[in-house]
Length: 640
Image (cartoon, rainbow, N blue to C red; front, side, top):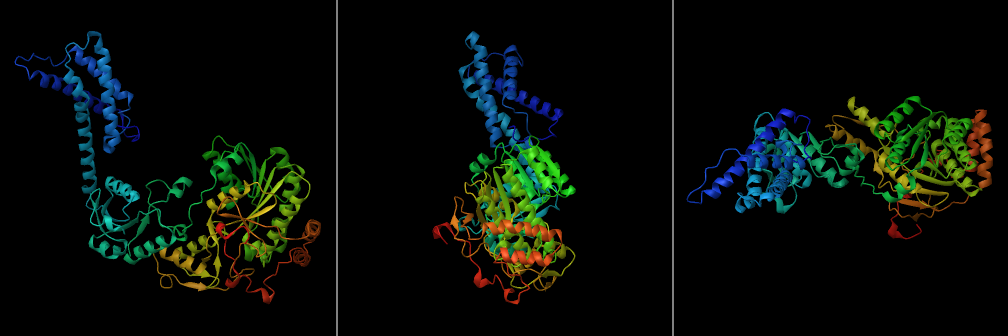
């Protein structure tokens, strides 16, 4: 059998039994061909049951079997690839026999025996294997009357693989498939009939007494997945899905593993395909420093950098638990990577100087930040200290020490900021752009994006926790929307933008369409097998401190330009006073040192003129739908 089907249970006893079987077949084949050849003669010679020639044939053929790895697998999974290996071994055995017996010019070995030998032996070796597999497959399907009956939605390549795996499991039995293709109706897939279209799932599920539905269409887009999930929910049966290719590549799912439908599947984020060559070329052999490297974004940046060939990842993290976790993960998954860590506050100049002087990073990803909007509204000092002044501390130190690249992770809340988070982040953006205009070799890049699914403190984990406790699910407003993307795709686009050649640029990531939070809550409730508003109530609590109804990704006057990647736009520079931005940093430090919140507020309002706090009544509806600027397409032209 081929080496592709390995199993630790294929022990020595079973292997020797298979080898003995194969050698017996070689003997039968060789003797049988001689008997058949001489049976045509009037006076056929008496053939001995064993001879030196037979022993030589058995030895040569055994060596050929070992050469092609015929005993590295299991009969249970015999396939066409195994039959090809068998024929290859038989043909190699024939060549060896011809070479060895050529010393006597093949005397005593009829040419007809040599011609038929590899084909006859292949049949004798392959037939028992295929019969054994067919018997085991039949046994798996029929051995347990309690096997769970599965109805498969889809009849493509993923469904074909799934049906074969289900039949082998013995725990599940595929009772049929559904597919919208007219050409497939009435056909069979590995013995499982295609019983109708996806819309027939309620009727067919009852007819075949299905106990589980499996969605085997990994290429579905958001709208298609939402439709199929809705059909599955109408049956009242549990349902699962096969993983998408992107999930397998990212390591979040295993091939063939069934998983619950996740909210990411329904949001339909298309797989991000960055310029892999550009990323590898930019990162290979570098030393990168990630501030906040144990957080949601920071830790994923560490993973992505490790995957793309950096020489060393240095993690600067204030939380010892997060530091321990990310270092252990990186060392476990990337044993050849050099992983270093410094425990400390990136707003502490001594810590920053120590990290830069010790490890000499080529690139710094500044991901450390406070990011919880309602909390920061009453913690303006900490928002400014950690989001603005710490950014200036790290960025200035990078300029002084000639760090090649400084990548600042910003947020969509820095656009027309109405809260402490947005204002502190917008000021940090302006600091990066200001330092980029000053003499120095450091290239500054800012990347701005919205919410990420599953990050610490995000709405999805909160909703799941509320649903697990029986509700209610709390939504701030029936019309509130947010942009979402997954953490891995956000970090891939950060790297894509950072690898560009621009200096001082602000990049925006294409976040897709804004998601209605109420709809997100309803989908999560349905995925939990509950009915929104019936099993799990939804309660509207009102917008929290500092929250907009809708977010925007860029200023209307930022004159965005397309980049080489369709999911990344570059914002044109906005006019502001560089001298004022940098001079007011000292004022911010003084206000932070004296805990003067009023002074901090005044400095922010003075330096970031777009900052209009929501405690001003006229600003309450900032970001209304009428003012949302959609993410432009590259086809729309150079200027937007």
